[in-house]
Length: 152
Image (cartoon, rainbow, N blue to C red; front, side):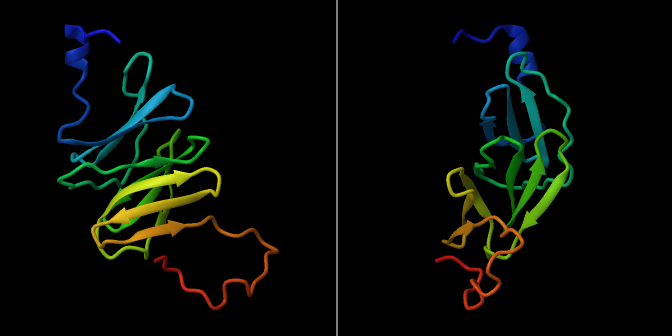
């Protein structure tokens, strides 16, 4: 890994506020950054250029780093936003969903477990929450009848 040249330094401004997170996609062809300017950006790993994917509706007023996560295929971005996690399509930037109800305060980090297909989040409320994928139709409808949606 060499030193940055002047032209690279000029292109290195990624956000108009503090950068609070960065992660590489599983295939290594791009990476994603988030900043306090309420933006999430996808970058080409080889040319380091903004790929101009519009991740609409992102909010980030964090005073510390926040860890985002990608699913195993690198198609979905899990982005902590307050006490919820927004789920975005990495290629289009469209919001695919919102995970909410597990935390009472800001979420600081997300980790995706590809083996169990679960997302783990941790927040300022001293909680770690496990988010499991929705069950497919035809599963046992009484299986979770007596369980709540909270993890300990």
